[in-house]
Image (spheres, rainbow, N blue to C red):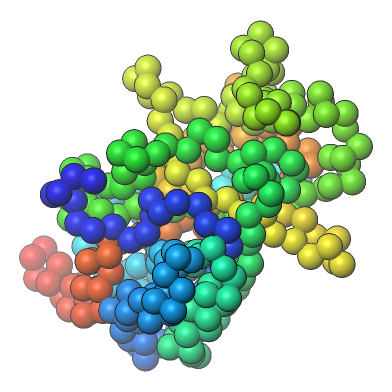
Length: 326
């Protein structure tokens, strides 16, 4: 990682075996906002307190804030590309936006550490927030998603992960930060499993067993891998995925929690537009005939150092300074 970029949160950490994803909304009132701001200075210490009990499990927590959440908690200045979740599609095939001011992405190789940290974080926030979505994810066999294909094959690694996932000089005041998009997908497993493997492979764009990408002359332009490959100025633009499987077999719930990090929301939004609208329009991702997005949110993840500093941010003072400067 370049030395001039502030220490990031655990955005680029390796994929874990377990994760808890929590999305919460702020309760109205200055006391609630003050409570959440105070937590910003304590997250790293709580991670150390829990994680030191089992160092090999690699416990981490990433905190992100939505556009509305940032304005309420911190005010100006704000990240250049932070905005509300953009919805795509129509009818039964839609990428929908759902409420959420705060995202917690907790990861470890053992669920008990994730659970303990989540409990401590919620204890600190108390009635200041309402959790609107909580998903306990797990690594499914050899990094496969719920539909049986390996997930995250094209993830950038090493320096490339830093380049694509973290902000640098494009928004210097927020260098070391990242944008993260989350969506919860529920799958029609009965319909999916009724398809021949060859049909599934054409929908995904890869061989199911070997994970080898289908040849260009074989892979449909509507395949998932085709539509989520983004190029700009002749170069592929990647995002960093940390997707997890989740489910409740007794309730017939089988899902994939999509979570993608990038230095700008633009490539992820382009992927969603390609999937839900089509490239060209109408040539949509056929995986969506069997998978339905039921949540959606865009959040900004400040660097680790900025996260701690945000505990002392006074949004009202920032607003007064902006007014005086105007």
